[in-house]
Length: 124
Image (tube, rainbow, N blue to C red; front, side, top):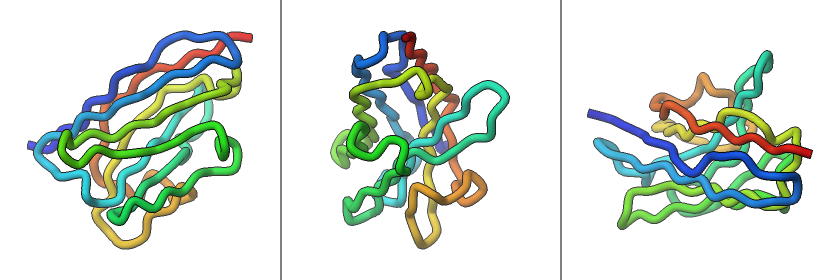
């Protein structure tokens, strides 16, 4: 059974940091893995991806502030978020893509396994 479980969300003030984790079971995270987010009333959008070789990709709005990484031995994906802004407030999801290509700008339709999400709230 494929399962992705996110954790690490919470409430922080602007400028603060959070580290999200995504524990995977039933599937190895050697494939393309990504973080997405969805704010109320908005579409789900890509944030960062990491491919099977460890290359990372970010959307412009988080470049330089967020870092995606993975621990193959622990089968866990991470998202280190620094210098958080109120506009980063959203539900954050991890996802797996089993096809070719692994860009942060890919839409959620290209990912085939999802976690339940973890809430991140940034206050000004």
